[in-house]
Image (cartoon, rainbow, N blue to C red; front, side, top):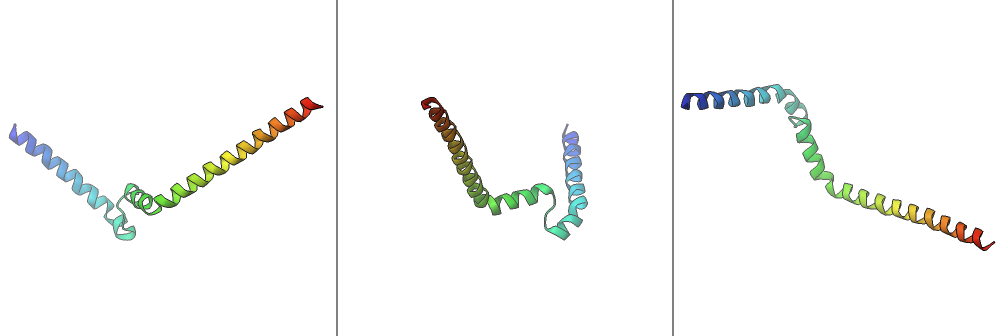
Length: 82
């Protein structure tokens, strides 16, 4: 039983080493091993900016929809008064 667990642990270590070897060239050139590493870094760097842009976009969309529906209601009430 112990040798089976040791064999599984050895296989896991070999897989981890293979991953490091396969991604070393990318890590040397870019500083990132995978797309996930890059994405985590970019998320951390630009989290505030994306939150601000999302907020501005949501407010802008709300203003546009409110204006459209308000104008639609005004035109309906104008037509009803004629």
